[in-house]
Structures are given as C-alpha cells and as structure tokens.
Length: 212
Image (cartoon, rainbow, N blue to C red; front, top):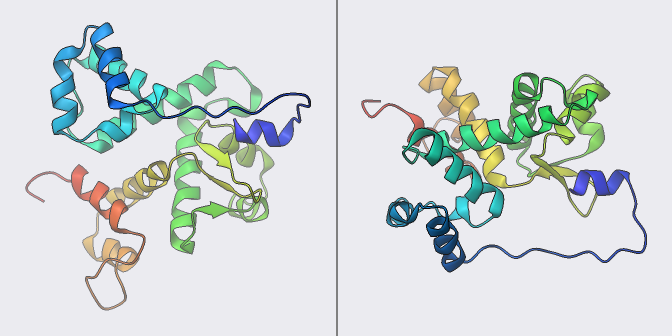
C-alpha cells in the first residue's frame, strides 16, 4: 500500500498496476462461486462500482454468503466493507492497529468530515496531526487502516472517495437535525447543496427510512 511504500523504500523492484475487473470477469467469478443468480440483481442495483476490484467483489460475495441477500443500499454495503477491512487490520496484531474496528471508525470519520469541510480530497500530515491533537498514535492508526492512500504530493487521501462520502454521510445521519444538516451541506440561507456535497447527500438519503 502507498502509506507503507512511503515509509519503507524498496530498491530494484518494478512497480506494477492492476487493472479493474471487467464485467465479464465479475460474471465468471460469481458463477464460479455459485452466485450466478445474483448477477442480474447486481446489474439492476448498479453495484458494478463495488465489484470491479477483487477486494470489493470478495466482500460482496462474503456478504451474500453470510446474509443470503444483497444489501438494501450502499450504506449497508459500506458498513460491511469497512468493518471487514478494519478487522483485517486488527488481525495483523500490530500495536498501531489495535482496536481498529472501534477507535478507527471515529478517527476516520473525523478525518473525512474535516477534509469535506475544507473542500479538499487530501490532507497533509501536519493538518492530520493538528486534527488529532498531535497524537502520533491516532495518526498512525488512521494511516494503517487500509482505507488511506498517499498521493503523489505526499498528502493523504481516502483510497476511494466513496469512503470519505460514507463517513461524512454517517456523521450527518447521526446529527438528527435537518437544520444542522442543511447548514453544513447547503449554501447559506438556501436549500441548494454545496458543490462537492452531492454524492454525500445522495448516500445520506439512501440510508434514511422511507417515511423520512
């Protein structure tokens, strides 16, 4: 991962990049796992963005095998993906990753909200340390969560922008006040969603009860 590469330099190796899985690849893999019956459902719910990488495809298949159904919305899928990723970090039994599933979620949400409010997709190490009150332990826990990459300019970003949107949406969902949500998401004095907040609001709405 990028955050490990930036810390440990390896010489004499050639960097390779993996391409996304094609839809034909996804179909073949699901059929081989005895899940050919969910292919049409994935297409109907437009979940291709979650299965074009091996990790997400495996997570989706595990979700289905465990619960015998596909998630009702993207929020549920993210809940499962992120929980599985953080559990993997916990299983590494590294000091920096201890209790990742508990403390890590709070720290990642804090980082996501800060980046969103700043209007950026990245954050520098100094800004991250300042956000976590100069706690190197918290900073390292976030960077080793498996959800953060290091950009070419050395700044940190979520491995997929959807992760940031998920954490911000969860934060908004827990506010409980429509007025407070509008204050953060909309231009002052209007109900017009701010530039860069559309996907987050859409994810938030997908998690609200139907009567809301």
